[in-house]
Image 1 (cartoon, rainbow, N blue to C red):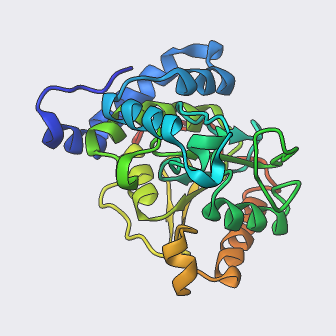
Image 2 (image 1 turned 30 degrees about the horizontal axis):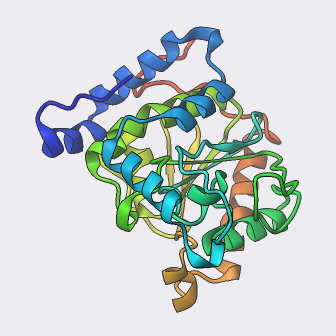
Length: 274
């Protein structure tokens, strides 16, 4: 489904945070029925060309590359989510890095943020190895799935509100399909606000490291500072702080019934009583 373009940036900005829009996105995703799969979402993301500015940028970066990656063939497409279809933890980042996931074709793979993330996932038992360098490096996630608010590398790492609105249906479908998910971990404030908007939360919960907010489907939104170089180099995010987030996610998952999952996503206010 394409987000409405009429009205330009202001309307797109309202749409991303509009509960009624969230309801429609959930309805569209639900209407896909049993035929929708994570594999189908991943294929559509890889082939997506909805946002002309992002398509131009990701392809230009892929053509010009970076000297340190000379000889490497860049992915240069939409970067799909990855992980365990039975995940109890869903991680939501901002967008692929121009010379990271836009190069390797896998979320958080090949950049400094990914070095921090996959090491933490390994220490907490969600990843099979502490490093992630290429799509074929043998990495496997168990109980975790990684996605993003936007699936194409944006110029200056800043997608526009309209671009975020275009990508929103992918995240909605993923959250619907990841039925066992208990915790949605937002890596950074932008992801926190995006997840809050997708669920139509009013008032919007305040972001913070280790912040928590209940979601309408019984899941928990958990916040973490993004493992960007700006945060890790300055000490705003440390290894113990990052590990504490995943330890808390484990606690929440165990508390929900030893990983039994929170059930299907529903639109705010939807009655699930039998």
